[in-house]
Length: 473
Image (cartoon, rainbow, N blue to C red; front, side, top):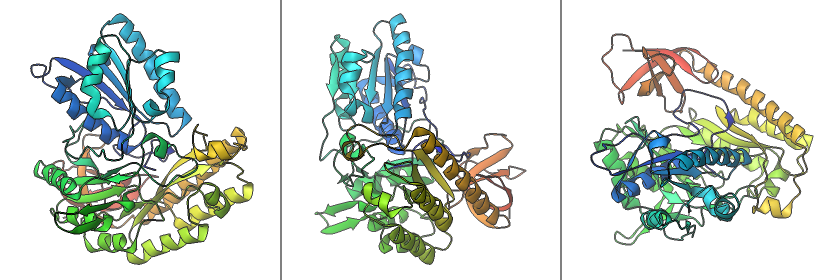
């Protein structure tokens, strides 16, 4: 499961719940589209693919939904809260449409696949419903919707990777970019809808990935994040060159584009991240020393119910192995409170796991049953919501303490920081991140620096989720 916007430690990173893209030259495009994205990083990356397809169809982006001919919501089904947010937004857009006949409203992504009939028949909020593997059919679906028909394509694919489409970078800072390397998931975690809404796992051909990353670097980008529901299971057979490319080999290929191009990735499943990946990370300075390693629960019993395929002890050994090969590696996690049948003892195991792994940051949720998942079919959601919320609060408090300790340990250290832009609080300060994915804020001073520059920064203090420092010559 990819990183999700959630109850989490807040920092000055680029992540947000929704966004509207840049405005295009009105002389080039005859119609305008507006798009918001919710949920995981893959959804944000998919929106950039959609933007490219719409540009080819004659639509330019706008930040103002009220002037759009086409309004799209790229949706997430991972949590009930995300679905409710989307419903509220659709109601708002329907009111705008009532005043602007001809506007089309469409739902994309995971909710589109899961709730197509509800949107079209029961709630009558949308004109188009498009699943994550059907974005190439958008031009035809738009034409169909313009006739007054409801347009639908939620078919899943075993081949679609959008490898030949060059994404339009939406709201880009010009420094960092996401690059999708695979789609779908085969893991069948009991709590997760992804295998049902995004289909089976398939890997994009390595040459197209390297080409996209190279183009980004040649256009001034200094960091790419390789995206997949489970990047470590990436596997592509290059028949032309008689080469089997694992994720470790792909990481190396991207790292070799240039030592000035930073490489990150998300997300790893603990069962699949290999020593080859860890040694490749350690070998190349420009592969960031940071792993998002979702644990979900610290209890072996709950992990088995979740179908996570590892035990508490196995996960702890994986953390040990990461620390052994890369002592300076940052680790973050996903944690679910109150999964079916979870006891206070299970919850204590999760808190204990947090103490053991000493996560720099975590995405933290209380369990929300999703229709159609294995858990919904097999187990009773029997932990009272008040208990879930209390346990989640204890997890959040634990993570806050761990984050403070982690950031405090960095005081006095000097890090190579990639400048991403101005600090949110002051345009007199720069904001960037170090290799361990920690946000670093520091004064601009008289230094002649720009976004995309690397700079050495010595940390003099910290907050719960930000390092504060000064430039070191």
